[in-house]
Image 1 (cartoon, rainbow, N blue to C red):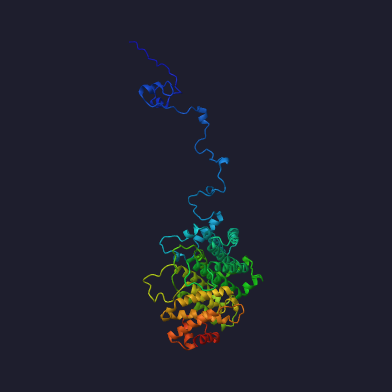
Image 2: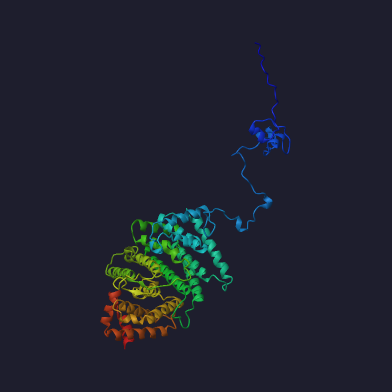
Length: 521
């Protein structure tokens, strides 16, 4: 049987067929827009790209494409807000270079106590600073100072600190061209920070200039001439607190210089020291644990929060001044001890012991305590010395200046500042006259009132202090009221009440006794 082999008719490959026929592996006639096969089978006819194979092979493979670029004609305007960083994680209040971010990161995780800054569990207190441009700039200024004092290095962030300081000064100068525009509180905050930073960098002259400007700004915001108001707004209270704290920090710094021969050598007649020399000495003292500078660094770390913007519904409450009083007692005891010791220390022993640094730390800590209402379970034994923050800080300053004599080296306080401090103190003791009958705070009330009268008598002979007669009469009247209510007639008994808080018994008591007799007769 003969068999014949069937030969398949050769077919040419269709290169122009539709994609549908190719998938079905059938011959396509290539008719467009719909081929005959797809028309007959009622299928969707699709054609691929007409790009030749050699052109398709010449295309860029994935990963080889050039990054997309915007045509220069349609590029964003540099002044447009869309030209800023589009990083979804960049939510800071100002644009910052890498060095600034690095400095902020250091300050964010620096050693310090910030647990009292927020009463909300899990809430990061730094979030309040990072979103506000002015607060963030102030934070960077303090952060640069904190790094230099902690590490002893002035070069790493020197340019960063200078950049933000110049930017802050430009903001202040812009506001000074029109002082009637909004932003006075921002001006007060910036000047306070600059005063502190310049002083701690060894430029006492610049710090003193900033302090004078701060007095003028606070006078604009909260005038102290005439009748000082019985109640202040949140902004006015904050402005007074900023002035009180800045003045306290500046005078404490000057007193530390006056007590150290080593510091006096590096400060020129213009009250300016080379920062490298000053920082080297401060770092050596820190390594030797002189002056409890760790507490001062802790206070420095809380400063940006002290000057942060408060919510409009913020309220201020009385504080417990026990910790501040204990620091004053230690400082008083140290001064009385060194007065009987002929040994020469550098710096003086009262600064070596560190009570002043602890007092600075407790002062800032008490400010944050005044922003929250005391807990209901706090007993009278816990809140033993209830007082307002401002009046306690004013009384502390008057005590350091008039009673202990470690501020101003016996010189007079600036007249306008002295009047403001007396106004704050008089308003507080007059408003809390009922504290006379309270066993827990009667002595503290008398101590503050007596310091008001004593500081006036101490500076009475100075020609710079005028127009304080109304304050003297008011304090005398209040002291007389306390004497009658508490049944204290003799100076010795009144002195014992002062010692219950703190009072330098080792010094001459002639002036103090004279003030007492004048008020009670």
